[in-house]
Image (cartoon, rainbow, N blue to C red; front, side):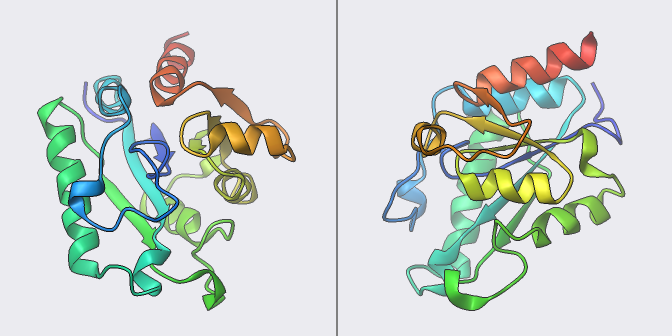
Length: 186
């Protein structure tokens, strides 16, 4: 199915699409998909959804890896997606360290505003799937739908509480994708 102009899903990367690390994903060899996540993106694509990623990558700002390495990590992700028939249309990222004071680092909404403008689409009907409180806060503040997955930091985020009102919780991206598709077809 061709991607629909008004069907969009925003994903965090680490902990949602790939296995997260408290020491950052600093090299393509460290990027490993969460089982079922790539297939979930392919299912969303087949159901007519555009999928984009909004990810904090402060490792760049901290000097842990450079833009060439970040691009290589994303190329590995795109290649892996391509092998299962999936596609991420764009990767929006914040390269700044936490203390940089930028407006793009989640929980700030800069990346979400940019996505909304790029796709000329209000985010009110857009599932924004993340595993951390800052992902959910940014989604809600930008007018999107905060969806939490239990993978990555998700269990810890759920246990800590304080989730934005209306946050929906799923075991993983595969379950969230199935719900998105079922609700669209209903």
